[in-house]
Amino acid sequence: MDGLHRRLGEIRQVMPVRDVGGEVFMRNVHGMFEHVGGFHAARSRAAALQLGGNVAYWNDGGAHQRAGWALDRGTLRVRPGRTTGIDNDIRGLAAWYTRHGENGAYVDAGIRRASGTGRARGVAKIRTGQWTLSAEAGAPLPLGDNLIVEPQVQLTYQSLRTRVARGIGTIRTRQATARLGVRIARIDNERFVPYLQAELERQFAGRSRAAPASASSVDAAAVRNGSALRLSTGLTIKVHRTVDVYAHAGVQRRLAGGGSTGGSFGAGLRINF
Image (cartoon, rainbow, N blue to C red; front, side, top):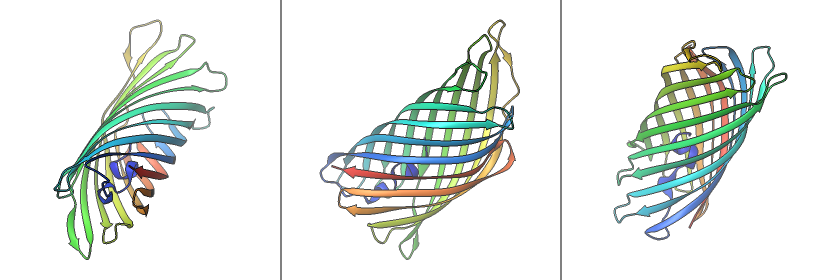
């Protein structure tokens, strides 16, 4: 569940074909990070392909709404320190609702359910299930010379359940994250919209709970809350009246406490009809 512009590119530049229309999109994302958390430091590498679509409605004033959904499939490789790593196959289903006002301000709310299976050498199969809830809002402010500055805020809640066979038990982890960001974009040419973005991310209210198979559940070590700074760039290019391509790339650095340091990039194709 990325932010709106990483997920769909700049959608305010879409020219509606009719009052009610739709679009389909495909995107590929990759990420490489080093994590510091409640149990072990770890390195991870992720890659995923997402396919989805939206139903869109425009009114006469330029405001529009979208209801969308997507399927994703990917891999996640985790290497905790020098121990044997775990390779996971992940499958997810997401849905969201986005509303843009006539002034360009937006709200975006989404939910995603994911499940995965993984295996490490000498360890039974590991099964995971995750719920993610997200709410984001932003509003463009004119800077002059066809530039806008767009403050953004996003709240995310994740619940992860990891189950290991052979009587080892289940670990449940919950984590809330707040993101404050600012995006600067140039919008004088609807065929090419580049942007720069800076974001401060703060994790809080993290908790992990272990439930051994033969005993009542007990509190495990609390997830380490922390903060991180992310700098990124992206663009949306209109190659046809109904076809857009978009991409983003960014780096992230952990500032304090738990969190992740690394980089991510992705690219997508969107077709309107």
